[in-house]
Length: 396
Image (cartoon, rainbow, N blue to C red; front, side):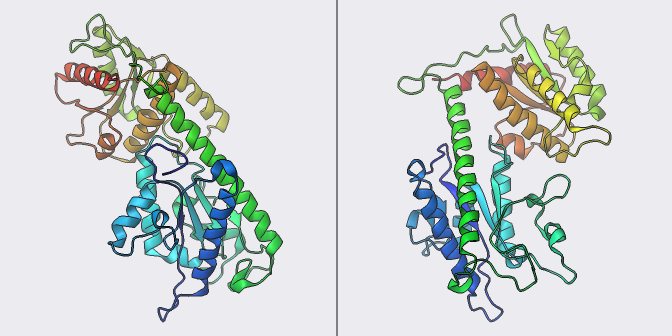
């Protein structure tokens, strides 16, 4: 059972390379990583509030936090990494070169994209050895060979935590306490303390978010569950239906956005925003257009979120199954929707109005209903989806 709760089975998953030598013999990196994982777990548990934090490490002696050697490995690891709130990666050249470690990262990211929590701050990089993978390497360019998920939108690597000396770095630089050495004990201790502080702070934030979400779903906070009050849309958008709808699209979808807006206005709905330009803001992963500074982006996101908090439902338009749609589903259909639900203390109906012509797996994973925008009867279908979603989410 995890500290953060929800459906997470572990709080921390430690992803690392065994550093096996060319002759198949386990190298000293495996021993160092074993000791590191055990010390990290011990230091976290020494803090009384975090004594029950679950730290998964594949060779742990604790059955609930390690692999079962009698079962198939791949399915186990996938289950454990997908069920972990934080991914701690021990960065070495071996780690960057490992296909298996790459699978672990991909599984964690794929799962993270379908959950309600922002992934920013939940991947923690521990620099164990300089990532020397080719000739001409330099410390200032080390991050260039890192996996993409360890970089920001501008290509800069995570600051992370360094467990080797940053002075006089060469391809042969080893981490503190290598082979049981007392070299760098103070530096190791200082970095480990900062790492523990970062992990426990992040776990506290995650737990608070999950608890808040649970309260939005169960306002009674225990005992007999209080039914959530959600206005239910009749199939024909009748008098007691959804009033204000947030309609999201990208600029290339402007013509369809105008058509959908006009149809819903004719049926007595209020559509926001009143122009498409505000909908330019997508997920945080989207690179900023040239000439737009961070303050302008923040202002537009704040304006969008304020509108969402005044709406009764959210509709996302989709015309192509591409990366932009994925970002819209995650940023608007998941993150912004969740914030609006928390603000209004009720579950807002949402839907993907699609012209793609086939199901969108991410929408299904996020439990966002899909309506066929190619069908002339889409307004009725949309209203029916709102009604079903609202009724289901309002069940005690």
